[in-house]
Length: 62
Image (cartoon, rainbow, N blue to C red; front, side, top):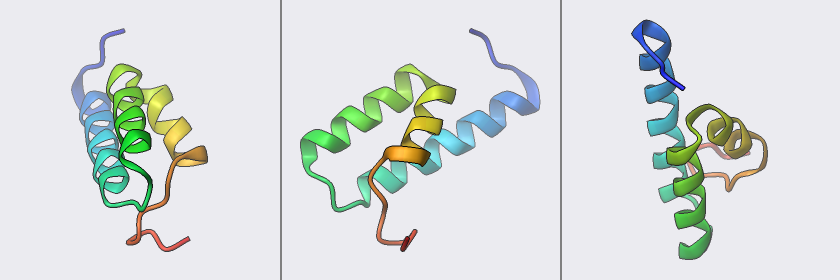
C-alpha cells in the first residue's frame, strides 16, 4: 500500500507517536519490540491495534 501527501504525513506522525509511547511504557522489552515491529510493518493497522490494545505510556496516564 502506498501513502502519499498529507495522509502519509499524518500516518507517519501517528506511528512515531505510537513508537515513542511504546518505548516510554512500562512493558517488558520483548513486548516493546513486538509492538514496534507491528507498528512499522503495518502502519495503519498497527497504530490502531496499539491504540486499542497496546501498552500505555506513563505520559498518557490512562
